[in-house]
Length: 407
Image (cartoon, rainbow, N blue to C red; front, side):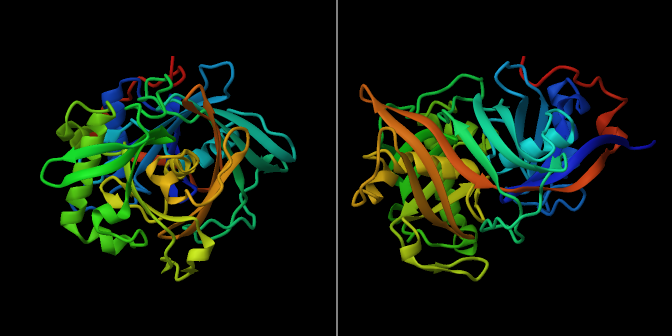
């Protein structure tokens, strides 16, 4: 019996890569869709290699994206992101991928979903369907096609490329239901988490980019400049981090129990730890001096330390840094930080190097409001063609979508 083939594009966006599909190329039935996508990626894989699939066996490379015409008058396309578990039959649709957001505009232009000028910059208005938020991408275009080559360098990506400006508008996230959520779901800029078997942790629980938890590195016995082997080779530390993350998810109203957060919602919220600037050698061999950064930041993704920084994590850092009293803001209290109408930019060190990101934050009637967060990324098509799925998974040709992602 022949395999079933589906049009797809393999793309890098920021420091991530994934398999991109137009919405109408996948089944209407969500369970069948997820079963097909899991098989395309090669999950679940007890060997954690993704040898028989398109995944890269890391949280940064085990991802899928669906893009279709927008259901909204103020957007061009709807974008749905899935974080695929490597060793479990789970696709977590609860959050966004800030890095792959950079590839949505180029994909939409290449697929003819959005018109582009002959030369210049194409503005692509994206509705992020997971979290119900708007992203505006400024995509460089030359001779009517997306310009992918350039001299923009991004730590965590080997080769330079053309820069793409991303504006995340009102990035306070909801819970994937298309409704904006509270920036601080508990109403506090700092909470104390009681994590049975591990202790108490001061944390900032914030909805910005993705639901994110910030704690001080020293609360984990860390310096904040650790690299992947320091964290990922320590099973006890990873278990502690997951326990903190899972209990924070319950506090944020994202899961009914810590067990549910661990088993059904592994992608969000994400746990990050931060520290004052401290020098280290990045994974590329680049020396990061303490004078180059405002703070050190590390984030865990799908149970492991991320090799760089998630795009949504960068947004959360920028927003949290701009708000006094937060775990991140407290590290920066000696600096004069602009509030109100001025955009605040923070430079932070991550395992692959240094990143700068800005956020515009205002305080209104005692409540914090985020207007937008801005960062630059790049994207590139790696392969355009078809992915193949065994007929035993896809069955007979399924009924495909003809509508947009959110109706």
